[in-house]
Image 1 (cartoon, rainbow, N blue to C red):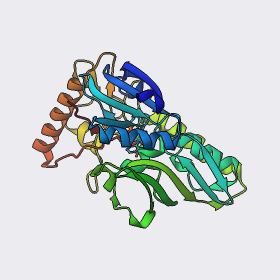
Image 2: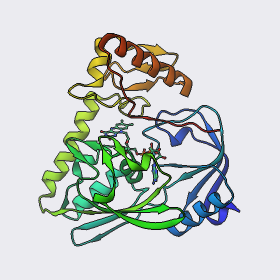
Image 3: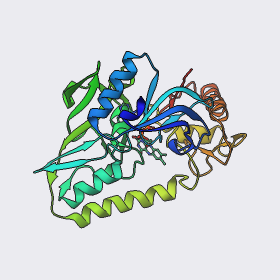
Length: 292
Ligand SMILES: Cc1cc2nc3c(=O)[nH]c(=O)nc-3n(C[C@H](O)[C@H](O)[C@H](O)COP(=O)(O)OP(=O)(O)OC[C@H]3O[C@@H](n4cnc5c(N)ncnc54)[C@H](O)[C@@H]3O)c2cc1C
């Protein structure tokens, strides 16, 4: 039944679908090949009351260790991009790197600072991703979402959002496609240099040689989560194979066989120690997923 909506993998491993490399799995992994099929799939799952979960590139999530008894939907095949004048429209499975590079190739400026975020457009819109002083909403015109089984278009100003937060964290909308209005800009070299410099900067400051899911905590007002964690002496502290990175204390790395439980225990220890020392309640940037 499910295979009329796209590729279906049964009892699929999700190890390569989350950047922590947690060895978990799902009863079904469905990869729709068109927006129509995605919409039909959502309708079907809602009608049949089957639990589902959308995954982008899995670079911001802590998946549970136990197998999911429902349907994981991967948007990896929904990655078409269209350009009209200075508007660029991309499907939400598109990687931010591809989106930024395509805009640069077409002499469009505005997304280059986000190229080094390793996730998809959908994941970025969901979490209001940002880097190097830009956020994904800076040049956004509108987003197409599936809400109550229907496709609706939302304008940027209609979407409730703040630092690493959007209303999509509270509802069941599936983000499908987004349009950005960019600036015509012919100096490609300059934009490519921004991409390159940001990439190099990350290589020097982030533990990209290990599995991780980016910043663990949001920065509290006027401070840095990494500074606080380092100052309570937790750099290098481990729970089994989950370790606070020596390179950047706001990163937890998987040294090999870290489980979801290991990562969550380590998070709890960090929160308690920082709270004890500074009375600051660190808030997670990463998303802990729970399923039955
Ligand atoms: C090395 C590294 C560096 C990072 N640096 C940054 C950074 O500088 N700035 C930053 O903001 N983030 C950063 N991140 C975190 C992460 O890459 C971003 O948050 C990214 O936008 C997440 O995209 P994703 O496709 O991986 O989302 P996923 O992790 O797959 O999903 C995240 C959430 O979004 C939901 N979601 C995804 N797609 C959709 C959709 N189409 N419709 C509805 N819900 C959806 C999922 O259900 C999930 O709840 C970093 C991560 C890593 C590993």
